[in-house]
Picture 1 (tube, rainbow, N blue to C red):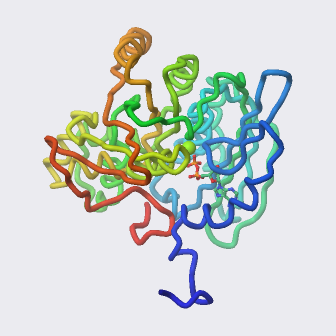
Picture 2 (cartoon, protein in one colour):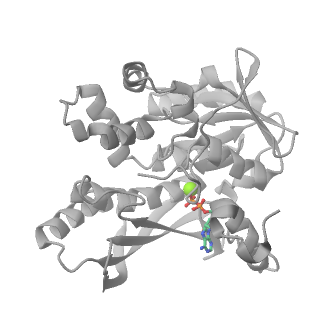
Picture 3 (tube, rainbow, N blue to C red):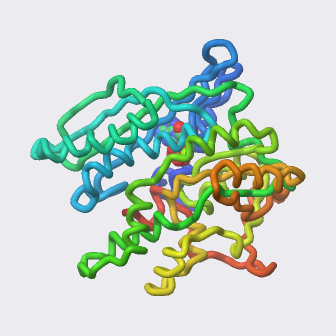
Length: 347
Ligand code: ADP
Ligand code: MG
């Protein structure tokens, strides 16, 4: 056991740290207030409406590489990752605040492109930028975004709603963003990118927040828990297990993967299942569904979005246990989901 005075945050990990400090702030909250622990905070507001609030921090060298990402893509992505958290609760995003610590040598053309990328998404989603803060940074570019949204109280989906027997489902392909990130990091050799590779890189830089899907699923009573996939299902499923007090069984052969990712895994020798299960930043939705209603829900989802809602596993009563099966055999993954303080660092 480590000497307590020498314990570092890296020993706890990101999620160990959050569960260490948060109980003091989550107990004794006034009724109907949801604080730390879900994709958004939920605040009573205007009768049956609820205000949703989410924030994300993006730092050069940790979440992106300023020398590699196009400024317009960074502007888009800074807003997109926050909208994804509103989608995860089934809400509608409305207002944003943008704070930035900017190195003084940053060129105005770069900043102009950043805002054009932001506006591309904000005008499409009708999210108004209402404020923020600006300061000089002596080191890296730091961006913090806060987004506020709204939802009807009864429709909000939390991470805590999963029950044993529920089917676990996802609304999109897994691992594309991780594949794109790997290509960005290995492409110093400047080889000509194929169209499949460009597709994966686009999926990393320009994730689409699944707002319509989130709102549609929020209206379905058979959907019991929902969150967005930001750290990879391996990590994100653990958040559902903690909040719902359950376990999960995942069938690896059911993870939906794109033909582009499949191709690149073969070409570069990546382990497809590990990329799909442990890779982060796909920003599609992860949900649990009453098994009795899954097939009708999946059919309606298909009619509405033209894509399959994919069942990838089952919620179990085996509290805290996440197991992977392949052809009904237990398998262990070498890579696990993203944690900011784990040794595997990003980007
Ligand atoms: P997400 O990936 O959906 O943005 P996170 O995994 O980053 O969520 O965070 C999990 C929960 O912990 C969220 O409710 C978030 O608001 C909360 N949280 C994370 N860091 C802090 C912090 N430093 N102070 C207060 N709450 C935090
Ligand atoms: Mg989230």
